[in-house]
Every structure is written in structure tokens, then in C-alpha cells.
Length: 396
Picture 1 (cartoon, rainbow, N blue to C red):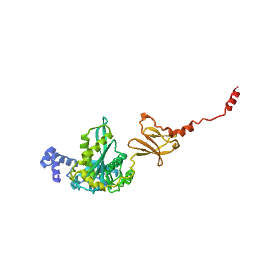
Picture 2: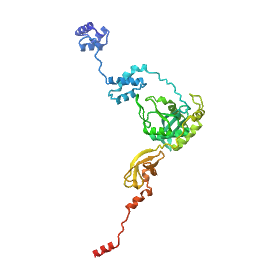
Picture 3: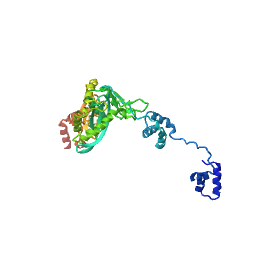
Picture 4: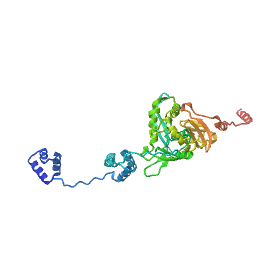
């Protein structure tokens, strides 16, 4: 740093016409230091300017809380801060987090071994493969038993709530029983809200499913998906084995048939690398501790409300379907199964059933639904013939 004597020397040499770079060389400083002194017209005062207030300042405690919770991904932290009203950028956030990274705890995870029958882990995977001669995106629901590592997967064309529930139900049926709890990720089909330090809010229909099958729902800690690492490893195992062995499928039904065959002939017979035991043998010790399946299978159909038009039809997915005419003008509940069957309910009573049709196939009508409507519409008034005779005489 320049002192007052240096400044006096700079000033004197400038008056003598010496170049700034030569002055800097003589003083052993950078030429820009000389330039700044000339602009300032003096030596540095020695006082540092006050640090400007940052947009991040009010949110630093929130950042620290996330870091203590093990969240170090600045993109995730940025989204959390935005939800709290942060209007700054990511650069200043990264600058705040970077010096703290040496304090980050080791990523090593203590393996959590579950007791037999206690827990199943649920997850989704996806891949692209040939189905019916077309390259399709395939979604597959994977459910893994925590103790035996036996797993089941079911392939479909989407991973919405209804397909998530169907995948779980099919897995329970495959295992022949139900675990005491099911661990899920934080997808909206199962978890409505889950923030650090707040109580988990589960999807109402997922709670209905849990009540029907008698398991307790559990959600992974936010931003820590490796909590259900057993299941996530199975997603990779399926991609790198099943979808490599078979690459062409006639349909999703054909794909799921091959999946069951592969599970029985390969996946169940493997020696698991962690427990050093054949999965099927270990499962034989777990299955007696699984809970029973319910007497009535859970209905995973889509559920919606529809208004019945005055012509006795409801609109569903771009087409129209008949319902009994006495329901005209009322609201009914519809259920659409994953196999494409449409059921119509008035209260708890099923009043109509149709198979979904394409728009090109046209409306679906059951004649009996509108028999009364046609009778009332086509009623013909009976008149005495004397009326027509009287009219004829008047025209004469």
C-alpha cells in the first residue's frame, strides 16, 4: 500500500514528466496503483469502505439451517429461498456457501437394515424401448422388500397417482402380503407437502390405500432420496438387465408377462451382494411376517364427477356415453379403470358401465337407458275422428 511519502514522490515525478509505469517500477508497485493514486489525489486513507448490504443477508439463517440439514445443492437452496421471498441471484448464494463446504459432513451413510415384514420401498424408473413396433417411453413402478430384497416391478405408459397405487397393489399381490410400512419418495401422487421441520402431508387417496391394506405411509427426508437406496438400486438393476435382455415387446401386457418370468427365473435366484444370501431363500423367512391382503381389492380407477345432460349422456375424454334417463340434470361419479372400463355411479349404486371408445367410434348408447325418454318424447295424442269431420264441413 502507498504511504504519504510515496504519494509525494509520485506527484513530483509526474510534474517532471516521468511515465506512470516508470514511477510504478521505481516504487515497486503496479502501474494501476499509481493511476488510482492520481485519480484519488492522495495516498490511500487506510479505511475500508463499508460492505454493501446483500439481498441474501435476511436469508442467511435459512441457508445455514438447510446446510445443517445436509442440503448443499445451491440450486435446491435457491428454490427454497425463492419460496421465502428471496429476489437475489445464485452467484452471491454460491459465494456464501463455498467457504462452508469443508464443514460438510461425509456422504457415508449408515446402512439401515429392516426387520422381516417391516418395510417396502417404492420408486419409479423410466426408459425408452420398442413397444408394438414403436419407440415408447416406459415407466415402471418398483417395490422392494427391505429385509429380503425381493422386488416386483410393473410397466405402464405413465406414472400418475392411479398407476402408483396400482403398482403397489400388484406388488402386494405378488408378495402375497403387506409390509407394516411403505417408504415413498415425495412425488405428488403420495405426498402433498413435505418441508424440512414440517409435518408430512400425504395424498388423501394414498392414505385411503394405506388404510385399506393396513400399512403406515412413510416419506423420505427431503433431498435425501438415498434413504430408500435399496429400491433405487433395483431401478438401475432392471434397466441394465431386464431392458437389455429384451428390447422389443408386443405390448405392455407382453412386457409385464416377461417381467414376471424374469423375476422368477433370474432376479429371485440372485445372491444379494450385501446379505450374501439367495433372495428367494431370504424371502421365505420374511413372508410369514407379512400382513394379510384385504378381502376386497383397492379400486385404483380414476375418479371424477360428471353432469348428466338432458339428453341422457355424459362427456368423458372427448366422447359421450349414455346413462339412465332418470338421472338427466344430475351429477354422477365416474370411475375409469386402468384397463379402460367406465363405470357410472349414482351415490354408491353403479348405474351404467361402458368400455371407453375413441372419438372415431362415436357415442356409446345402451338402448335401455333411454327407453323411458323415448316413450315420453314420442307420445302421440289421440283425437276423436269427429274433430276432423267438423273441420271438413267448415272448409266446404
